[in-house]
Length: 606
Image (cartoon, rainbow, N blue to C red; front, top):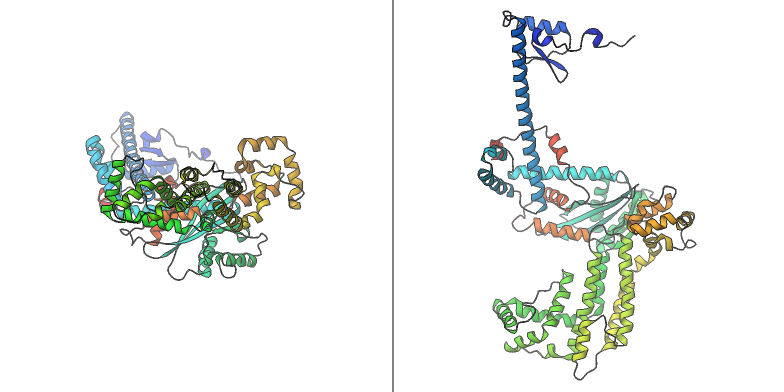
């Protein structure tokens, strides 16, 4: 049977119907200009019947010209109403979008939700001065506490949906997990994910912050991590690495988080082996303890506390430094939690050592230890070596760090330690400026170069011990770092043929030289699938729990003594928004989902 056509049944809208039946076409449907009703089927019979039964008496005395004029007037009125509706709809959408944008900024800046009211009051006052005729538009933007809280939750859900969608394309992913305690003494488990898709593009994002109200055993941690992985619908066989802090509940070989996840992967018949690392930055900070120079640090801490702890002493010390016109006007505090602060305190104390002794003498304090030449030599050494340790610490920090680059940084530092030990035994202090200063000022005793060289040797030995697990992955990391220098014969058999093809390809060698190791993996051709998989697995690995530590700082900024009742759900939403890196909330999509809701002034002031 032939398909029925609209044209053959006179279903195309005829211009003459406007004047004859007072109808016009709106969005493909015939709409009556007199009453606004629409007719379902576009047929002349239907239009004529509607007109004759409802409106014939009103216009029966009009001639054709009058009917045309009236039809045009009615059409103009309809268009005017439509334009007004569109404008109102557009203004309503803009008001909702503005509330989303401001909610995102409030979350990112760690401000309480009540800041929305303050911002709105400021906006209204500015509007009254700059553009008073648009006051109503600003009033329509709802920024009440409840609205901001709702918007923040919606933004967070949108980001999570984007992450879940990206997660479906991951061919390899790794997790970074760490635990800390908030101001309410609730243990918080921070989880980040680093995934790599088939294009070898890396996504590094916040996965979850889970409050641990009870115990924090390895089993408890595993339950939370497992729940997150399952919620994301991530396959266990694609999990490549797990980087954690050094707590036994994390790293325990039998009942720790690492052991539990390995058991889970065996249950899921995952073919790959889970690579577990203790955070490189934690390891580097712990290596500093191998120097065993706590006696030096305790004297310095005691001295700084005497000066800083009492307000009078602190004021007098600053005034004393001003009198002497020293380069520095104060001493910083040191805290064990902030590793980098130790180097700053040591450096300042060494530079102000004479002024500190003079001030303590004026207070009647014994300065024998602070003037002892052996102590000063050890202090100078600790100042220099801590400065070197801080430098590597800063190099290892940051987002989007490739684990092979972090390994190279640690490897270079171990080589430097070997050089420094050799030079120290020969009293070559080129890389130890504070030690050089002390050596030049020594009056009687010789500089203890052998003793300090032994300290460097102890530090080097601790680096080798702590980073042994990275040495075990050396060939894997070097394969990503410089595949053109890898020995093919010692490589896994499944990579050997592709490695030969790669190393003999001049175009790829030139590309590697141009873009560097981290970006080069994306240019590996599809004819090298094994190398691409290997690169994806290595790119997905976390070298540290830096992102977790950064998140805990954000958590402490948000959950303060003034906001201690902030709910876990709202805290989670805030942290997802403020820690997002490669993802951004799709605000236009959220506004669309809200059904073009227009906020009234009365609603916004609730």
